[in-house]
Length: 264
Image (cartoon, rainbow, N blue to C red; front, side, top):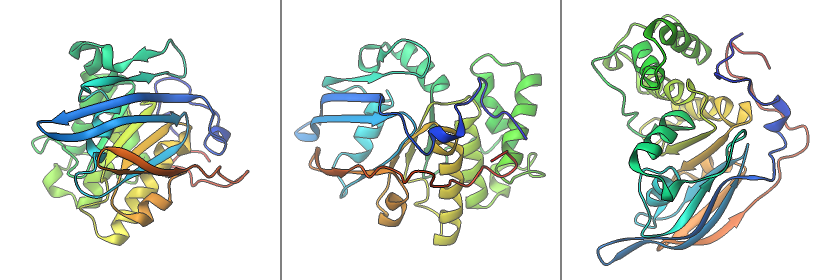
């Protein structure tokens, strides 16, 4: 059993009963690229401990919304408020680049379709790097990274370079990298888009278990309705506006599979 988060993680029943308090609150987000309006007055609350799928046709503003919520991009107007589990709320959109970078390194995790791993590094080095850029010494970061890889079913593959892994294995490395810092919110952009259906289902299960399964939050862009159906809520965009959303409450006592190698 490992303690994969640097701080004590929330009780397991938080994954079943998400808190009604929003961890992210977006208000009146607008973002234009030339004459193209990518976000057109988006209001959105995302609760702590829930999984949210963002869907819509190409060009609808899905990735722009994800990047704006995560502080990767700044909107032309509007605000995003991040309220951590412990600590004061922070307006992401008003932070400078240095502060937003620190927020992305510590409180947020990222999983992209291509993984964006460093091919020259081994699997364990890729994961440990997320800790080392936050100041953790290599001697402490490497064992913790190895623990996460083992927990996600990659024990024995720590020294392989990314090119020596399958697509599904590489995405597991990306998930481990996103979670090793104890991210409260993980942003995923088409995390299964480059995988076959079977491998994609396995990776999605691991992504869900390692985020909402531990009481944290997952915000995911996807074009796949089956992937979106695994989330607590789906937000649909068209032309930069939210068209519809539904928020079915998880059934009381509904189980979530534990991360491989961890306690249920």
